[in-house]
Length: 224
Image (cartoon, rainbow, N blue to C red; front, side):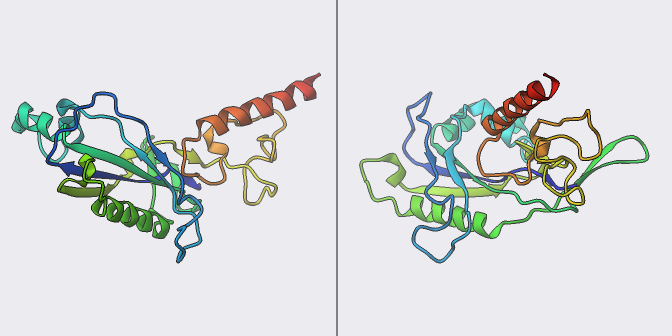
């Protein structure tokens, strides 16, 4: 239970001017992580980052579920890729018991998931879109006429999945104790991302590694 992954929306802004870059700068914006700085919403909204540069072939692969690559001329997909500014909006996913991993009677794994905590996420998406539309530095290609598309990534776009074996102080609501040891088993520790009690709006790798090192130190002390 309590399966989680980021609420993520991809925003694509198309410009008339070609972006002559192969390795674009990496940009991350955390100004809205704890809420709207201008007021009106005091709960966490999330993180904004640039997506990687896409070639025409990469773009064809991204849309192949809607449009087979064979129907898209390479010159057209490459021209579109060279005029794209792509951003990813990431917000925290909160635990919901009904979001769970199940084993079906036929032995297949089934994942039940309903999106939640979308109010702040949708607010941040609107802020980013309004900011792009209102960009006034006419020396910058973002200020050129552009057409914006946004899409909440569906379940098959899962990244940084976590939860299901979360830790906590109460065995009635958590599987692991605060040291990531199973409440009812003395020789079982879990240190991957399944111990997370909530899914924050950033890559969980560093937190996972730091916690694993913390638990390793505890085991060294315990085993002498």
